[in-house]
Amino acid sequence: MKYITLVVIDANNKFWPISHSFVFAEDHNMYEFACNATLEMTPGRSRESVKLGYGDMFFEPERVKEWFPNILMMIDAYHLIYAKKGQSILAKEFGPVTWNFLKQHFVNALEAETKEEFDIKQ
Image (cartoon, rainbow, N blue to C red):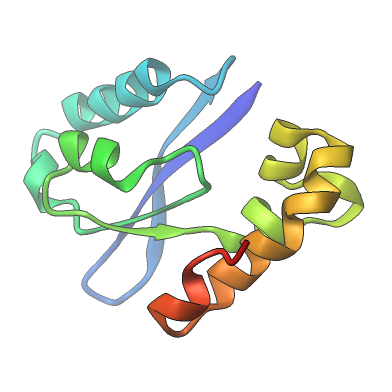
């Protein structure tokens, strides 16, 4: 089971959770449903008014832009790469042996400051 919450920032720069959802699989249709349901419950907001998004690797920025066309998507690198005890999303996806081989390449790419540093060297 996965958890998703949508949060807004008010005029005083305070954060307010507006929608909490549990989904039972990492599935784009489930996330899309949660986003659409939230928009239906907030008639004063349009999908175009959503400006900032934050999530893990599963939220592909191009896909999220289909739901929220003006969003700037930020990736949660901690849960993507750095979570302890092999609990990062990529560690679970690749498995421990493959992840131990690939991890440093992903860390280097995330921390890169130039395209050359980002590109994986073979």
